[in-house]
Picture 1 (tube, rainbow, N blue to C red):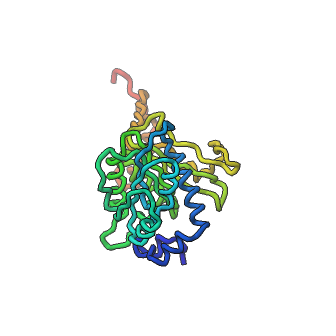
Picture 2: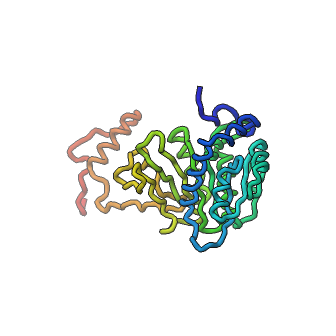
Picture 3: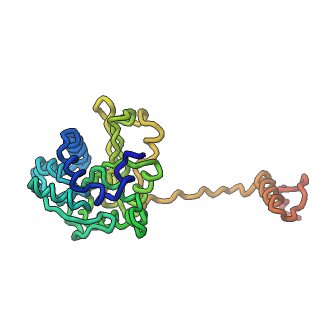
Length: 289
């Protein structure tokens, strides 16, 4: 049986009062959540000018990641689908504003008011159809489309995710690109089984130098070089929906004999009547016939 919570039950059912209490009272989970939130905040690359920013914590749960935002001097809005999680957050008297809602139905926020968004282990839930009316691609489209609208131009969104497989990773990234985001995947400690963490770093707006994806941390705590990353980790990089199409090269030589032989062979396989090959096949005619 899988130990991935998103495969066991929908989030509003899985995170009931009992599971929420265990989640919030675990010192190990609290420590992990704090470290992931700190890394997500680092990848947001907010200006260091002492001005508090309004951030969005998607899948805020009991407010563990929101506490990291508060400690760094920012204001935040937390969204979660689990009422039990939000009840615990209220009991803990977190300083953020809490909203009960399903991110798969879109974010009901005013356009351009959010300076940045983070999410810890939440976005991959959208890849599961918990109800007969749920279509993962449509839910991802609604989520990323509404997120793009509520973010200020040039703002970043950082999602720590646990995709089940490569196809799920590509589905999430493709949905973000279609919504207009630029960015890609940052992999921390790609060669470590336990410490490996994956972050989706997106920028609201067209690609530019500032939208380049940061490098992931290596096992020694420093940035990994491109040569150290495995082929699987390099398959997702900077991309966007506005990438210009490559121009097709036009050959001035025309189609040679090899192309003609190949084309005639294809027609023969389809059962068409094709003249036999001779020494005159593909030979260029003289100017005067």
